Length: 355
Ligand code: TXA
Ligand code: MG
View 1: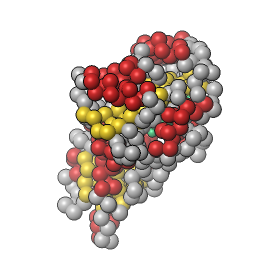
View 2: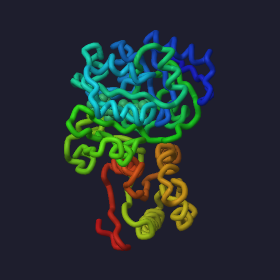
View 3: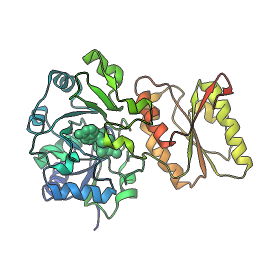
View 4: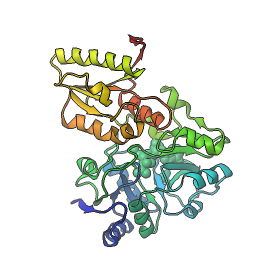
């Protein structure tokens, strides 16, 4: 199949193009579109065949459920049989935006969407292209990130094309995504809401509204079985092995530099993902990709997935990356980096490597 490439202004989407894309969705076809987090691969969420086509195009395991995207908060009640006070408070505070709520499902939601679970994940995105598309389609839109399963999520239309050209009907190019990491997934079916996947809405923001939130044990102990099925799969991985250095910035930079030099000495093509200050230290032959200024976590989040993809294009043999502090958006960023590393992590303290 030929993938149609439709360019669209993100802030003022051209109505004619939006109509074309919405018509494709209504016909059961697959359309990739921008959101404020990452690009999504959309299909009519009430059409089983269309939903199954998403799994096929991505090579996604069928037990990994999809998020249904809606255009207005009232639409949630058609998909969820109960919306409790916590869920209502979160909707009021963060919708539209990068927050997905897991709620008890209604029978009308296809099993193909929920992977047979008794819950359904719902999100109201903030990007004008996404919202208009869902509105015009007139149905909830099932949309995972628009990457081949296991690859870093796409934050540009080009990244979608790199993975899915010929496998989907259209991509709407609305430019790069502002946040660059996926939405926060919060399970609202537990007495205290639980973060299943950290993302664009921070733990601190959630706590300010709810008072208390839990974090799924699997996020801190990788051996636990995650309650969000998607979190158990290898994910966000570049092709080369990635080693993550965590710890105080200066000491971590020094340890990373030593490792880069050793690998270059072995004749390897080395990739480094570091802040601008650390980048200045690295030998010229390093394939260096910068997060941005040291401590600027927003910039780092927005660049992470394009950085991981650029290492694939440059065919490096190994990647060394530094971590960031885990507060705010840093929690989500570190979650993705740790998974991308396959938990090959070196904790650096005060210049001494504690392995
Ligand atoms: O920012 C985002 O959330 C993007 C954009 C396109 O909206 N979407 C996205 O979808 O990241 P996906 O499919 O790549 O990730 C959805 C996550 C998976 O980890 C999945 O297991 C989890 O949400 N999920 C979906 N339904 C669930 C449910 N009923 N219970 C628990 N986890 C669920
Ligand atoms: Mg994904």
